[in-house]
Length: 352
Image (tube, rainbow, N blue to C red):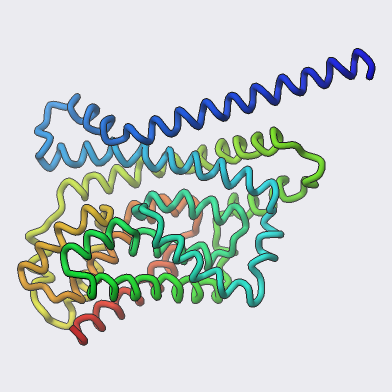
């Protein structure tokens, strides 16, 4: 080995070491920051001259908790999927899930959503990562629907509120809606209604690089580049969407909802969905509202339809998704999921 070759190898080894140390350090910082989200939101809220328990205090605390949470999730998930994408190009992923094998992707994605303790906006980073990795759109939608709708936090709280039988029925209906809605959306072949930059990403250079010609540092670089590209495009809309959600979260019109959904008229289920979609909270936040509605005499199907619409079809979620999906695809997504929620509400009112 010549001196020049030795120097070149030494330089490469030093560069690789710097990358490994840098990624390890960034991972530790990410983990520590994620663990301090509640403390940070309380500290930031205390800087404002408002009562923490007031509507304004709730809105401010919600904003300073959810914005860094979603951005941290987006950064971490996009980086990991970017690294994985260097092994599994969109073409390979689509081929893996093609044909008969794809039918198993819908319940698998829905099951992953059930096990993921995210609200609707927090599920969006994984959705973006899945889409950019070439996972079929319908399969990805199954995850996006199931994650917030039947996540473990909401199920646990619902179990404590109405018992295991109704919580189990809710789980079955939510899982079924996510699976069937994903399948329907997949059959509609809506990939052409993704935003152009997402379609370009699926055909990007990472899919064309021969895996045997790049080392692990190159894969890390691909992950970092994915973060720059994707997070750089959507971060402002994360802030805008959660800002709107924070205002809604802090000023929930509970009295109005009780008047609209307190009866058992046939229109109470669609009314619950219409009221619920513009709102934004997670499962833990909506459970107290559900408890109040049930206490005031609202029908169970109506109340669960409201709960599903709040956590599966929130307005802030749609604002963030607009950076990935076109308006037409968002409208189709809302229509398919709303149909499933309406069916669940009417059926619950009929059998219980």
